[in-house]
Image (cartoon, helix red, strand yellow):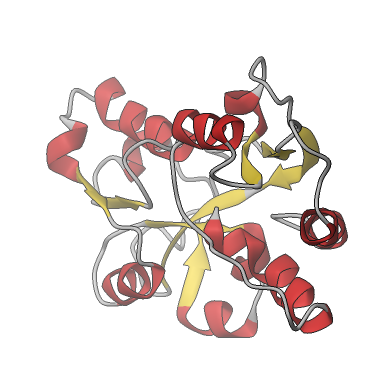
Length: 196
């Protein structure tokens, strides 16, 4: 999720030079608890994981993701890639607890494989990109970056609809009135929503 906030955070800091941001990754459950305690001011994450919790999330948009490979990967030439074909290759997921990782695990479970022995978990995207570029590994990429010239010059998207769009939302601490910094961040999130 952190990388999806790049545009919003950049805009926020360029327009509020005195503002300081502390950006941290956390699970939704830990983030909701931190928000309630007042340890953080804003929580951004998958809307479905935040629903039913207090404070209720406000919708930002949908995150669209795809699988990607090196340009010369054997699956690139296929007009329709099947789930069973993906399971024949190592896949790199961004983290252990994400919705995307759950969907990728199911690929191996449906084909009788052990996902723990077949998947890599790596959060650092530059490392993921280097591995995918030089091997048969398959990575996960957000729609926004997948259309960049840099990405397209090195990689190809696989023709498979594996992930539905993931609704993303944010929650702010409701116990006190939002500070001017939180209101400015909300405005930046609405102007540059994750995945847009």
